[in-house]
Image (cartoon, rainbow, N blue to C red; front, side):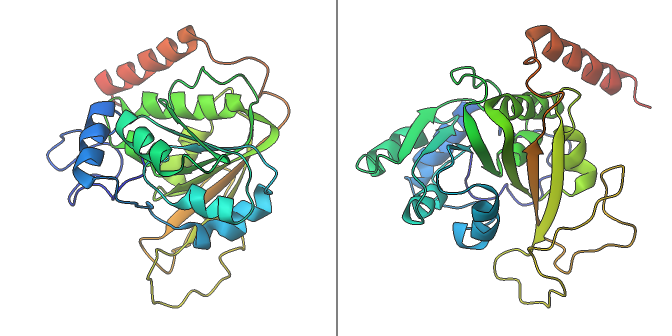
Length: 270
């Protein structure tokens, strides 16, 4: 699900103006969109050049990588050029997966599978050293049943990472709206936050982007902290810690209980 940004006027966490939800979690939406775009490459948010310092620091080239919601992005190709040897790319759109398979048929380091990030049961537990997402979680947060979709995705990513593996999430969501989704009860992440200005930002950045931004105990930005670029991208580096993780994957009942809690909150708001 890595394609041009959502339409103008869309709400950033679930709905467009007027309360209408977009179908960003549905394959039909993305199939139609990629047919219209004709396979034109597009990297959502940031190109690999800007993200390289984070990726190289937390996922060395020998890592087995999972690119969730790969879309038509060039990032995986750029990573292969930088020495990465095994990148599994998945996307909900069969259209874009077929396009990318044809494009990279002669690059064995890149594999492409049609798959929904909310159900990656084709992969066994602890299959990967690193998972990278540029915009897929954000897309789900703009779709139908957004909180449940986000929960399913995060739990699946957690299941697929080995202990000590990292989930690198690039998003427009600040900690107040993203950390709650990352901190699922069965996950045990060590989360480090970085903030990147958007490409083309010409203002002054007073800190080095590789310096982590401290979070409060509640997982929020410190009082008074405002990024120099109001449209910055947030980079969450989530390390899977020993302990709660790996003890047992979420069951269907776990997901249904989560759905029940979400529906109750919608019917009985605080």
